[in-house]
Image (cartoon, rainbow, N blue to C red):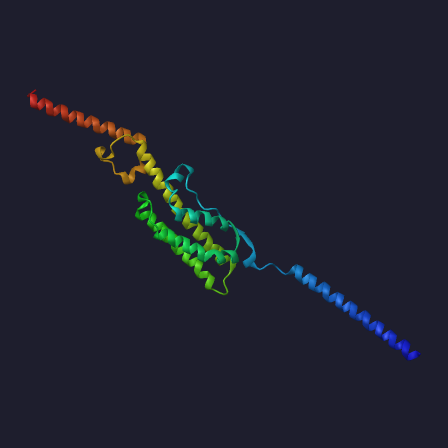
Amino acid sequence: MYFYILNETVKYIFLLLLSVFVISCGNNQEKADVKKPKPLMSLIQTHSATENIKSTFLKEVKDWNELKAIDSFFVKFRKISANEVLSNALELKDLIKSLKDSVKPKRFNILSLDARINILYTEALRLADLTEIGAIKATEVNTQLDKTIAAFSNVTIKINTVLEKISFENEIDIDLTFIGLDTTKIDTISKKSIDLKFEEELTNRSRLYKDSYIKKQGL
């Protein structure tokens, strides 16, 4: 009888200690799960939006599908994790390659715009290259994405500048060749200055004509 009671007591103590141990391990595991930080590559990062084509110029690029595709694709990069950036990097590179190789509208066949598109493609290649690095850091991915976004914004800004220049020239009802104006510098000259130059040219031509007429008349 004594040994039976002793045996039951030992079993009870053993079960009690085992229960305490299991509960303790469970609490420690919960605490570990709470304290464990989310991997940096999975954290959502907010990035700047790209520059847009001005609404008044949208009709000028409506048929440039490669440009429109990239503009739409960049929307998903505004709030995104580094892992998601890498998942989309190769597709972005291909879209920019298509833009680089596309037949641009005639008015955009200028070296300065080509240079910006080449820079954009270079940044996209660097972003795509990060997918092959096993120990890449989230900060490196986010930094390269920001550079790629900035490069595309520079392309858009240049397109807006080209269209603004064309629009400005169209608003001036004068013959630029007639007055000898360097059209590559027109964006630095106000319309008022152009009008003054035009009036000055007319005055000079009128004076020359008058002098020539006087000489012919022998006056």
